[in-house]
Image (cartoon, rainbow, N blue to C red; front, side, top):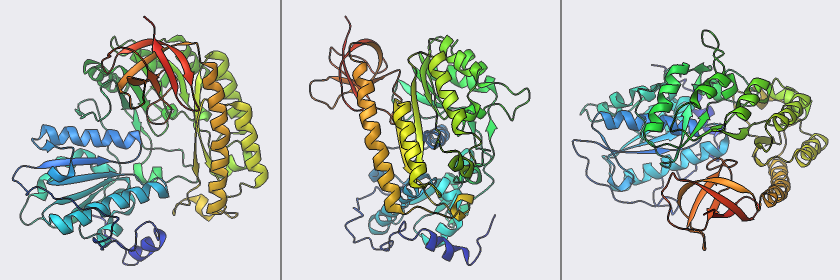
Length: 487
């Protein structure tokens, strides 16, 4: 077991100054609303709170499946839980803030209402800061890193032992799920994520993922396809391919299986209706991959292509291993080979060295390229990364101003693109009842990914979740579409 450096906790506290509130132990503050908990019983009622990205969500679903198989009962409410697992993210400061706030809220509830409640902090925050947090948060019973997902049952069982002592188990981040892990799906009955690999070997200068998740390691094609078959048998209509970098898939395996071949084989699974591709690195989007998407009706004409920036000097400082010219070439090729493709990207605003001229270059590119969907993060200075030591850091105020400028421009672009869709016929995957007046249901068309893009609102009769309905788009706004079904 790795032991903490005596001085490291102090450094950690200073690094997260403003993230861990000064009222850590003040459970009387209005910030933490405390609720009552049930008595701790001989059998465990476990609640899993999953934070962060879809990859983290899958880890939570795997842990849920393992606990369910071992006889533990999963519950949705903290008030009925004996054990609460918080599966955390630690990618950037806002993610760390969210995780810390969640943990502190639970710590307050434990202190005031149920001292016998067990709190487990899992995932990326624990992997990155486990021993430091162990020293600062005595209310937390156990910290486990990303390598311990497969061992969750053993950890939970030990919590019941009378002589159990608080612990932090931070091991090598080498866990890789397989199709035998019976995930407890937390997404809608119609759609779910499928993780084809874990870890990352890209070593972007701003990113801590390789140190938290380990080097890229791919699942074997047969294993992935077996999971896809299982998901289809469970009624899943849309499989969303995810990884830290989906286009890096197979490079670490014998024979170097290709992502395009995997997608081709997945499209042959009878009950899978839609396949969607996320996290495609622009340096590795090939003609073969684009042609595969174009040739398969089941594969959505949609690619998530995180470019981060367009200026060559910034891309080099980011260690993105791609040039602005290559990014433009990939986008042009995608639109040529796949007519009507919806492109999503993500950007970083305020990276060190992003001068006003370089920012304006990025802004001009956004206006010229007109992405269908776009998200922006402000640069987060992460300790242990090369970018953290770069000169010409941009102020927080200026980073936020640049982010808001980009999103303002994108809102206009998105509204204009959506307007061109009025009158078109789209397949819509029904996800549930609508909360919008005049529209009974809501769902998504092929050009919309869950949670990160807009939705489609549907007028019409009753539909079951998971139904795919042909609809005519009748109206739109900046991000959402509105439609009526075709009889």
